[in-house]
Length: 498
Image 1 (cartoon, helix red, strand yellow):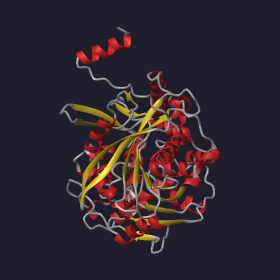
Image 2 (cartoon, helix red, strand yellow; image 1 turned 180 degrees about the horizontal axis):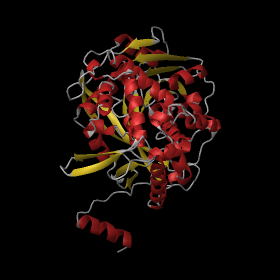
Image 3 (tube, rainbow, N blue to C red; image 1 turned 45 degrees about the horizontal axis):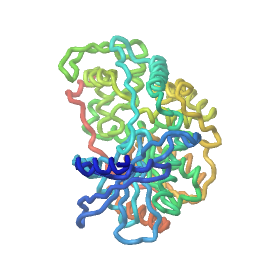
Image 4 (cartoon, rainbow, N blue to C red; image 1 turned 60 degrees about the horizontal axis):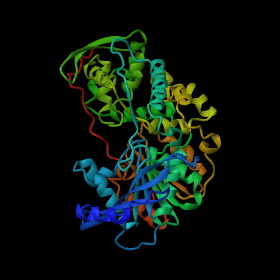
């Protein structure tokens, strides 16, 4: 009996499944599964899949990695280019929204389904942190509690983390996790799905990722809607722009009668100045119980205060009460937060890898290091990243890539002027480079995505959908007011007036 006949006989006799060996995947191929979810008018079909790409396109022998994506097809043809929705982070994995039951996932799904009136929606995850591929992380050690935080210590720790992460991943080409490769993934998925041109929708890092895609593949981009805008040379926020957002929050908060009894002379910004002077004179030590009930002592210094000035600013209604509590020497809540922040944890590697690939121009770095608001906010936003850039393997893409240049791509920018993560000045500086650009400033808007910023402005939201569908921007306002938040009040009685 021949070897082939013997193998076939054994397979049949033993009940073994006989199937052809799957062919190896190739770069640019996709693998797709189908599912259904409940929509507002009944079940909606979707595809969830994996795009296979080279980890480093500069190397022909680079290994293949998976990038997750999902597609929700419009129920009827609209003639509009599909919208590619690019999440933020870096490291925001979103495909779990199809199966998660939490309110955040349900809200995200509702927003995705609403794109049906525009056309097909394609959601793209990020290489190196995706549900359908790898999630590259590294552990970092706890920081000591017995001395105040230090930017210099943080920079040294980031350098050590970079070297450790590279050594721990010898089988991976971490130099391939540049933002240019992120953009190439989008264009490769566009080709795999058979689209000639696409529109982009992204907020925060998703806006920066969109801008990189527009820079490298302008002929493939029909239009874009960007919020919480982060230009390619603005990966590190200008301290004075962030401080200006805090001032705008403070202006409204000082008019709240419930906060008035807690305000010192000079109001909230007067409290900030007094705190800076207080902690410049020396640290304080606070004893608190941590989440496990253990008593801990933590040293809080001037550079801890710099970090604290931005704590809770994403929820603007909480920020004034937090600052006023510190001013009145109620440090316990802050100290408990610092104990948690200094604990050991995990970092998503694509964050510093992508940031190092973007880098910063020499002119902007000069402005960062000489900014007058450094006295209040410090260099936390950029010092560690710039110091550790040589230790990360991703190459700097250079000024030719990151500096703004004129573009004819139609773009709608939506930005909140209370955004302390990506200040509204980012949009104002970038807008002149887009000949067909329009900007909508949401007064009192934070760092939310475009449709969250517009949730109380149905006509503006309708105008965004119309722009994505047809390219028309009639009726798009230049500014709208978000509702005034309800400001928290400190959880102690107001001090007696002297």
